[in-house]
Image 1: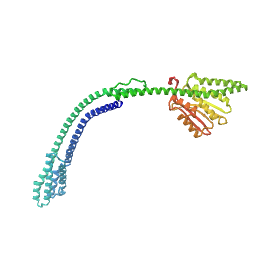
Image 2: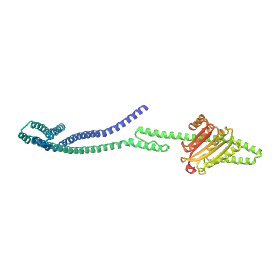
Image 3: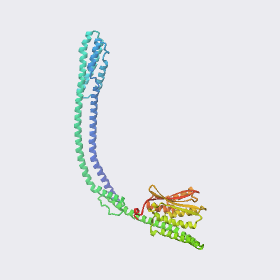
Image 4: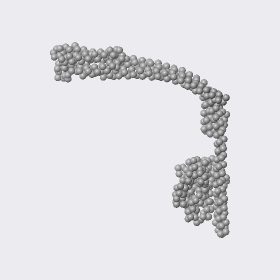
Length: 481
């Protein structure tokens, strides 16, 4: 039964596709025929118009002073004037060439008859001119000039003007016909387009009720999901089975996604709480034991004032560690925290360590995760200064750079080899278990502020190590805390 249902759904889907295609073809096919017809008619008119215009242009090359030039040159030749330049055969041959070219491209009957007459007259004139060249008697020449040449040049010029007239009339008639035809065809296209548009709108309205409207509702639902609305809603009801299945699947996906996000969020919070607690547990017992042991030693040695100072520093250290249960503190509070820590450690390792804290006062109002600098200072002491086996120096500095806060914890310990530095950097980038303290600080900063912030480690063997902390310039009010 399930197979039959799927087959029926598939058949319905194909039927809807056929309806879409048939609707498109019923609109596109007539328009395509009309457009192709207009294109062919337009091309035909353009070619014809261009041919006539070309004939007119070619005929315009005909010498307008043809008769006067030929008659004058022939007259000078007959009277053997000093101005004679010989027989005007060149002018006659040029006119004959023009007439022959026009004869090959002219289609209109009257124009063709006129230009054919021009061609025949040019050939006749050329024969008459050659005949005159063989005549020696002056009177015979003058008689031929009057009765042959003058008459023929007059006829040639008259027929050429007649040709131009007929071609101009033909060109004007063609332009009028072309304009009328284009107007009629455009009217047909407009009417046909309106009819097809009405048909298309009517069909679209019928189809949209079953298909487009539910799909539009699904698109709005997906847009809301894209903006973060993961509340499970009732599926959109549609007449089309495929659309209904799509809506049901979206709501099922949203429900599954929301449950998975909630689960991942809770797991992430629990993991961060565990890591923070583990970090604090890693620091506090061992540090407290050693500090109390040092206090006892100071009291037994009679150094009561130093013991009191150390007790005050230890008290401040734990007070700032608790921070009234806050996980986000100001840079001023973090500075006091590492100040207390370094005071205690300097009293314990007075022959091994010196330190300096230089954080500008204007940066103290900005926030960062609690226990950001203290693990870095502790690393600098235990992995840097204590391994040096001579007195070392730890510096904690702060500055602004590119509208961010940059904090640096540097030591002049033995530094790291390139291989070890690559391992530490990989632990920050890939979340490896090694470098637990640095990795935890790095991840907590990125969770709070984003992936562009966090730790950067620089180290050179036998010179020292720098851990650079980059955080945004964000206050408690801006963070919503």
